[in-house]
Amino acid sequence: MNNRERLQAALNHRQPDRVPVDFGATAVTGIHVAALTRLREAVTGDKAWRVKVIEPYQMLGEVDTALAAALGIDVAGLITRKTMFGFENTGWKPFRLFDGTEVLVPENFRTTTDANGDLMIYPEGDLTAPPSGRMPKGYYFFDTIVRQPPVDDDRLNVADNLEEFGLLSAEDLAWYHRRIRELEADGRGIILTMPGTAFGDIALVPVPWMKHPKGIRDIEEWYVSTVARKDYVLEIFEKQCEIGLKNLETLIGLLGDRVQAVFLTGTDFGTQRGLFISPAAYRELYKPYHQRVNQLIHQRSKWKTFIHSCGSVRELLPEFIAAGFDILNPVQCSAVGMDAHELKREFGRHLVFWGGAANTQQTLQFGTADEVYRECRERIEIFGAGGGFVFDAVHNVQATTPTPNLLAMFKALKDS
Image (tube, rainbow, N blue to C red):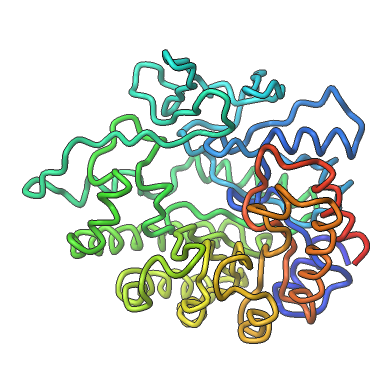
């Protein structure tokens, strides 16, 4: 099988010739640029190469076509035109991380250093705007800076929380047209990151790409609002959904069958020990909109739909299936109730497990190479049986992950 056929077989719950692999196709299946730089050098021997930071919020690196071929990676990502800080990935320039790693960043990746030595980054690269992200000195990625005045309930306006949503522009569509042709020529399967369909994704609520956001943008205040201002939140979701459906129709028409899967939402519903919300709250707040989005996609395309939700979400899996999702990520097997054998047995007919291999919180980061190898082989045997599995680590690979552990992960794939 070629890369695309391998991915398609797994998505259709058919046994491929080997497990398909994603490594870097989305903002939740990526690798920190520092770890990627070390891995690339170990695999290719090229010490002069500078990896591009394509997702500056988490400082995720680009897995280039040469490395993808060397590692046997089957999936490429069609990401959004602009990054989380509102600028495009163009005009590359050198940048040095706190740990000394030399990388490339976009031209509008502009930072200043505060009195503590922290890096401050700016929306759209505009140094005259308030900074929207902070990388503490000695650290590896940015934290969002919340820029919200005190909430005045008498003056709340739903339109303020909808500023980031709009119909795709002619410039956006030209970019998608160009990128899909480039990715198609690359030969890998393709997953689209869909803008505007992540209802209540807390990473997006503070809108670090906007210069002067209005509405409810504080993380704690947003979560409070899902209970205390429920009608306000539902009105946001309703209007967001209307825009998202129109954009989906446009992109389905433009991209067609060249895309195999679509990443719709990264809203987390689980923690390490249990659910973050109740099933009843999911059914009321999120499920109606998830159903509408999934229904349109399944009616108009062959795309498989991808939900990212961390933690212990087993109790919600029947709801996700009923809402129309085809793919679960990151499959956090270390969380309560997320045993790999049980997940495959109970939900493997309905869900593709995308992720769930090496545990980035524990084994991949702190274990030995042998422990990583054994864990990956086990997950391949469990999740890969009969198809329905795309191999990737459990969420993004962190900056200080030992290179021997990453090599062990790919050895496990080769040996399976």
